[in-house]
Length: 234
Image 1 (tube, rainbow, N blue to C red):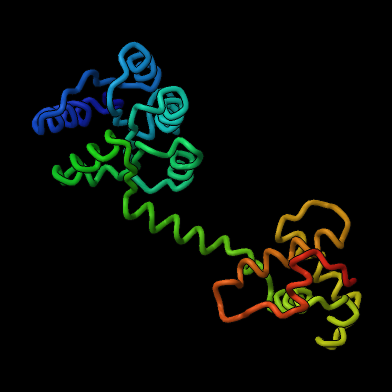
Image 2: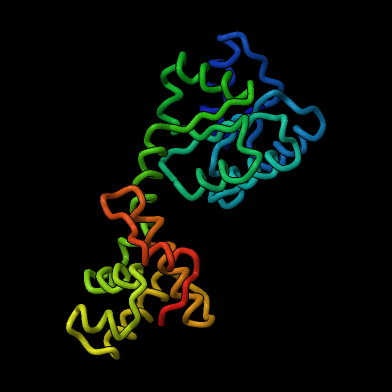
């Protein structure tokens, strides 16, 4: 089934798919019609535009999410004019991420690749547009928890990971304990740690630091290992 509001593109997709031997059971112009048609006669796969009537914002992707929940055996290939990473993440998140795809409309012009992508989704595979993958990787790097910290905050957190108290951190950096407390508070806020006992948040902050630094050259010391186990040293 196809859900695309543009009559020309809808007819073009129908002809393209029929030319490669696929049967198009319905070609529809909005999300509600798509969901009714799937409920009446579930196809192997649906091709869905991200933006459909009436608001032309996210009706298509919301319909795709409904399909994933209610008819997990139906493959869903979403087409988008531009890279919209939020929709891509919504679509592939969760347990029902098999039989799903997200492609830019430009890819349709390569008939062989589009046919292969659709066949893969129909068979339960996953297809992501290379440009979408690139955007998600960029976002992943942006969300490195250490990236939001200032140089001084990173130094403070590194010393916290060695199990040092605020007084010891202040002495090592030649700053006041009050300044250390301010940096620690900022770290908690940037890591979005909920209000709780400072000891608990301190351990969580250190765990995030160790997890983010695990792939780099920095390795935790014995004191850091005590912090990882929840050792209190404040």
